[in-house]
Length: 423
Image (cartoon, one colour):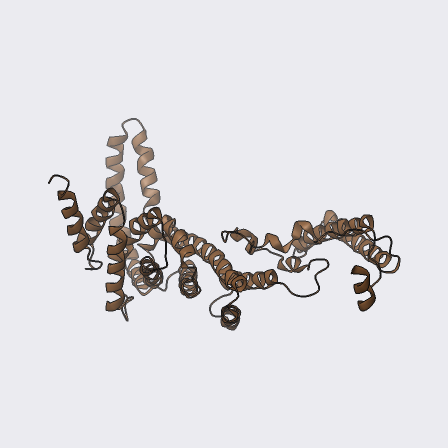
């Protein structure tokens, strides 16, 4: 069969396995040297070792050409050939579409994605895995492209088109590509959003240095007496400086209320909107269970979202609302642990989040649906878990300005079930 194909397509006999091994080893060495050279090509001035790497790269690529010439025009006996070139830079390392969807986000953000496009030896046409890698690359680029750039909408429209065409085909493998790429992008974007909020709120923290100096003074002998004098001196200094800083603080607070402060907050707003878009896509393609599991572990993001910019907070509330409503879907099987973590971490955000300046974040109908989903999820939990969730909810609900979500019916039901123990 192999000889017939060689004659039909004008190919000669395959080279020996030994010659193929030499060729692929040389290609691997050349590719690794290329990476080392590419990492230093942006420097203002190369060092001696950089010049040496460049020369080694040229010599190695020349050797690749010589070996390729020998393999094409001086074939040897037929022998088996490996499946992949560049084993260390195989595109399968970018994202594994044959197994679990939880792949490393750092591999998706490769600095040199062009090396991942090396095709498999013996494969003439495109593959489904290549389509998955292309979709993953576009979703990764969305995190890096500024939202004000015209290329941002171009990239998002391209990702939309690929996923919609995959869905229209209806093939299981193509649908799996959509779900896997989106789940990985959701995980990566959630991590980026957490780091952006962390940096943004770290810049706005006030009084950290004062707390540090107070602890140091109290650790000294007679520190409690010294601390009172230092505190009194600090009051005097603050009284003098408050007049000067009052206008600046007022403007800072005003800007924070409008959500226009800081480059990190702008980045957080962009990432939160991308995360909302990915959540809707995961729901449309039937893979929202991936987002539910990841959202149930995002305790740090839930904590930071309580004091986030109102526009960032609004997007996170919408994401949480979508996921909570999917908890009660008929075809959804969610573990008790995931439900418990979701309710524990994200109910405080519902209580304390702003409803929005120009328009409500959620409509009245959406709020009713979310309350119904929360009630149904609570009823499926053990009594002890219900006690933890409802106790925390009551504390947040009584001190929050919002009157939503109102879980009084769930609280009364839990109390009634607890009374049955003694009857």
